[in-house]
Length: 424
Ligand code: NAD
Image (tube, rainbow, N blue to C red; front, top):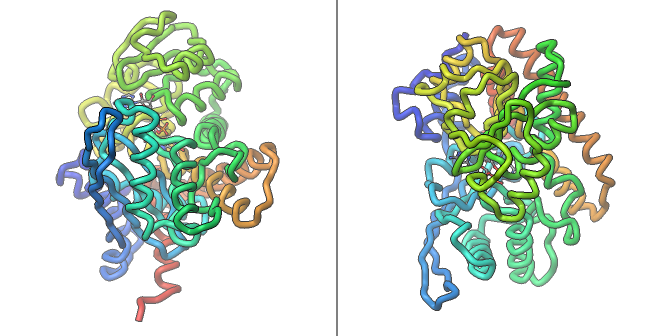
C-alpha cells in the first residue's frame, strides 16, 4: 500500500505539509514527472490583505485575510471562506489544494481555492460582521468573479456573509452578479438544498459505505464531532435514516446519551445560540472522549488534524466518514487502517457542498432554477458516482480509499495541465 505518511516527519500537523505529503506520495505512485509535480504542488496565486474594520465602540481593528488559488487547469477556482481565529496562510493553502482534488474527484469543471480571515466571528456584532465581510470582499475583488473565483461558506461564514459579498461585488460592477458566490440565500439566486448539501452528501456516503460493508444503517450508532452546518445536518439526516446518534460536540464540549440523543432538540438549542456546555439532556463529555466512543460510525465534522497519531488508536468506530476537511493526519490514517477502520476521505465524503455550489452557479448563469428534489437527486447521483469510482480504483490498485481518491483527482488535474500545455 502507498504510504501517505511519506514526508510526514516535516511537521505532520501543519495542514499544508499534510496536503503536500499526501500529494507527493500519490504523485510518485502515478509516476508524474518532476515538472508536472512542481506545477501541481504550487499554489498559483496567494493574496494576503490587512484591512481596518470600524468597531461599534468607534475603535478600529486591523484584520488579516487571505485568498489562495491553487490550480485552475480545469476551470475557474472554487472554495469556501473561513472566519476563524486560527486561520493562517498554510491552512488556507492546504484547503485550496484539497479543493482542487475534491472538484476533480467529483468531476466538476473547477480548480481549487480557499479564503479566510483571522477573526473569531462570535465576538462581533452583526454590524461589525457586515463591515468586515464587505471590506474583505473589496480587498479580494480583483481575484473573484463568476468566471474566475467563486467563494462559498465555510467555518464561521454563512448565507448572510455570502449575500453581503455578492451585494458588495454587484455594487462595484453596477449590476447584480449572483454567480460571484454560492451558498447565498435563495431569495437572491441561491440554490434550494445548498444549506444542507454537505451534510446530505455525508449521509449519501454513509449509506453507500454501509452497503459496501454490509452494515445496516438502521439502528447503527453514530458520534459526530462538530455540530455546525456539516455535522448538524448530517446528524439530523442520519437520525431520519434510522441511525442512533449517541454523541455530538461543539468547540467547548460534547453531549452523550447511551441510547440516543434528541438531535433535533440540540439543533434548535444551538440555533438559539446555546453552547453544549449548557445542554441539559445528556452526559457531558470531552471531544477526545467522543472520538473514542464504541460507536459504529464516527463523523469528524469540526476542524483539521483532530485525529492524530496521539489518539488514532483510541478510535473504535468501524466506519469513519470525514465531514471536515483534513480531520485525520497522515500518521493517524495508517493507524486507523491497521485497526481496520474503513475511512472515507474528505475529498469524497464532504463534496456535497461544492457539488450543489456548482449547481447553484449553473442555475445563476442560466437564471433558471431547479426544485429541491431535482437538486437532491442530482447530488445523490454525483456522490454515489464518486464513491463508486474511488472504491473501484481502491480495489483495483489495492490501496485505501484516500489514496484512490487522490489518484483519481490528481490524475484528472494532471491530464488537464498536459492537455493545455505550458504557456507560452
Ligand atoms: P460551522 O462553523 O458551521 O461548524 C463547525 C462546528 O465545529 C461548530 O459546531 C463548532 O463549535 C465546532 N468546533 C469548532 N472547533 C472545534 C473543536 N476544536 N472541537 C470540536 N468542535 C469544534 O462549520 P462547517 O461549515 O460545518 O464546517 C466544518 C468542517 O467542514 C470544516 O472543516 C469545513 O472546512 C468543512 N466543510 C464545510 C463545508 C460546508 O459546506 N460548510 C463543505 C465541505 C467541508
